[in-house]
Amino acid sequence: MSHVRREGNQAHDGAHCARCDAVCCRLTVVLQPEDWIPPHLTTRTEAQLLVMAHDEDGWCVALDGARMNCGIYETRPAVCRRFVMDGPYCNAVRSEYVQERARAIDLTLL
Ligand code: SF4
Image (cartoon, rainbow, N blue to C red; front, side, top):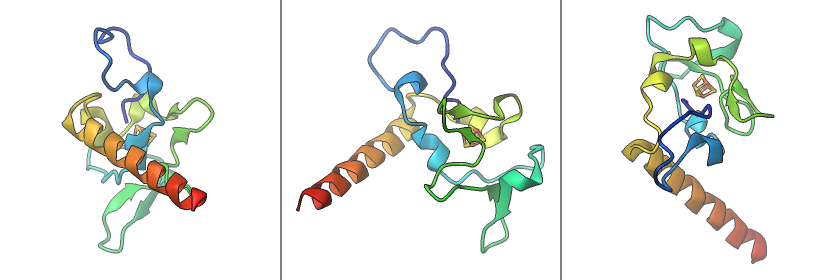
């Protein structure tokens, strides 16, 4: 979401976009009427909600995978703008992601 490197907020060791796999960009982003997103980056859910499309690995198709930052940062959806780095939701999804990866590694080692 707002995972582009930012100035400031470096005073603690909490979550920071510069040290994250853009985990928030795996979440479902429901587009709002004020969003202006190119149609090829969007899709509809079964319930007909207009959302950001995901690639086969589960990341938003607008993510610049080489830099792990948003390829449409200046015009990113309202939901992405409101996502708070190192906030409760950010930390919750990061924790879940780490646990998922640990489980996958455990299964690989079995
Ligand atoms: S639009 Fe940008 S900030 Fe929002 S989920 Fe996609 S890549 Fe992340």
